[in-house]
Amino acid sequence: MSELTPLDTVRARIAKAAAIAGRKPDDVELIAVSKTRSAEEIRPLLDAGHRSFGESRVQEAMEKWPALKADYPGVRLHMIGRLQSNKAGEAASLFDVIHSLDRGSLIEALAKEEVRPELFVQVNIGGEEQKGGVAVKDLGDFLEEVRTADLPLAGLMCIPPQGLEASPFFALLAELARRHGLDGLSMGMSDDYESAVKLGATCVRVGSALFGPRG
Ligand SMILES: *Cc1c(COP(=O)(O)O)cnc(C)c1O
Image (cartoon, rainbow, N blue to C red; front, side, top):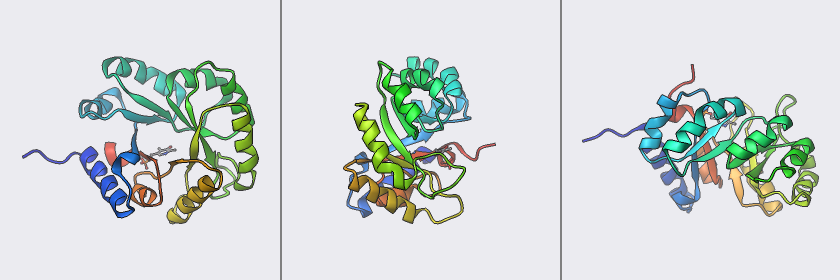
């Protein structure tokens, strides 16, 4: 009998959380966060049929993914880290989805590109000084700017403050999405993805639960 892999376990937990919330497991995209992981660490997931991955640096993704994409058709690549405007062109050509849209300069830079990845607007859900993301009070205006630029808006993304129970922040993000007529919710990481799924996440971003602790 073969043992369950971490991928099997995470998939099963997502399915269970989805069932509890009366949702379909297929409505949740598991993004395997492969930042800092080598191609050799990533290949077993690709061999197991997984195709959705997240990276947080354009440079690192450019080094790893063109070769992997050539070997494994159907890869869907997500940019989940802070994006500099001068890297917007490269990011648009490599990534299928960008989760960290949070500044007007980035809207402008992405609007100039021919290829249009799906976009999540990152919300600074805990109102943290040092964190990226649009302030909750500015969200309505910012979404208006994105819509005016005719960019493909998929939904909202957040990273709740460290060390606090995440579920109230997930519930708030879900409420903001509802209020603004958006379906996509990118929320939940290794420690809290089940709770995020119960609260409506359509993408969860899971790294260490799949690849082991980061060194
Ligand atoms: C690193 C990272 C993750 C994954 O974190 P884990 O705790 O390893 O699951 C998810 N989202 C973002 C934005 C990240 O930077």
